[in-house]
Image 1 (cartoon, rainbow, N blue to C red):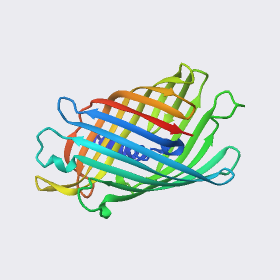
Image 2 (image 1 turned 90 degrees about the vertical axis):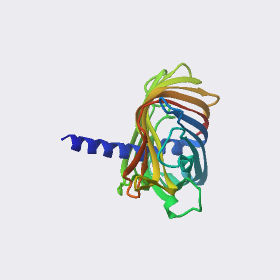
Image 3 (image 1 turned 135 degrees about the vertical axis):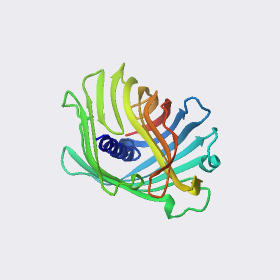
Image 4 (image 1 turned 90 degrees about the horizontal axis):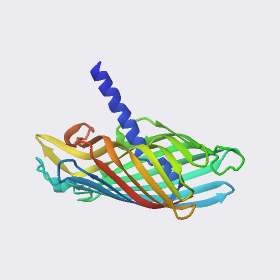
Length: 297
């Protein structure tokens, strides 16, 4: 019974992780984003930090129809200062680059459909790029957006979809659901993944929130690492975290934000070619910080 529960929990984590690294909400609404994330390792000099830059450009093809092209780059630094039974320098820098190609159009007054294809490069980039560094991700979505409708008392947005991500090892499309509602002048909530939150609006420029979210990465290790006779060929991080955040809106579209909190569950692992664990880098919960500026629709 314990093994069944453990296996079920691992499957749920994989599903959540696959949706989180697609960052669907951000790619649907953000035109530009510059972001920094930091997680120190508890009781150690080790740390993880990430700098992320996202750019999207919508091209109108006809009324209410758009092609969206863009890129999302993350430079991830694994600062491994502890003693490890392998050359940690091989994992010092990870690079994840997504090329986003999307199309969205209205099918009725209330509903819009969208689809995106995301070729991905995720690698340590210590050698020439090979097929092991390349992945194909994507998704299809139905969106009912009433956030700007002046005729309803409680504006909302519902996004339903299916996503596919080759880095999870699950050869099936996975469901995506996100529901946002502005309850009144001061409160709103969002239910879904990669983040669920409750926001309080002091005014339209100053907003605080509590949140539970997920984050992570997956990348190919170009230099395979031999650990006790087993070869580690990729590295991954998946975290579930909770905390508080603050947003300052310079305009309706330009926003500075910062989130801080604590990881509830963290798995940082080296994996073999079958995605099985070879070595656990860390699973001790720690402080979390993410801050940045974005320009959104």
